[in-house]
Image 1 (tube, rainbow, N blue to C red):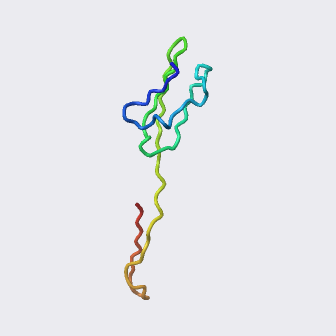
Image 2 (cartoon, rainbow, N blue to C red):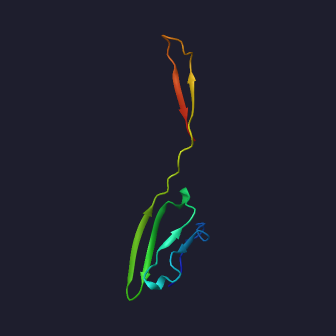
Image 3 (spheres, rainbow, N blue to C red):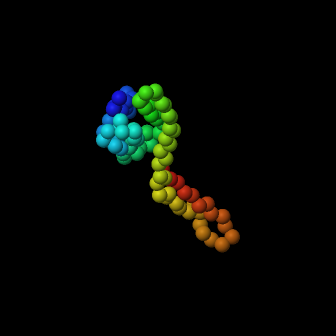
Length: 89
């Protein structure tokens, strides 16, 4: 039907578009720009020519971890114990 159903409140309206200008030319691929972790989910493609074909794709968007902050607890004296701590947001 030459349209994309974005779902309610999904925030996809400005980031999803057909790859080809005319999806009736047998390519109904879509492009999802500026991926966000919240875009994780199941997406469905429904193509109707003479019959209806439906395909679902599960998209998982992972976030790159932040650079860890590391420090030493304890005195670095021979024969004593120290603790190496690291933390990442």
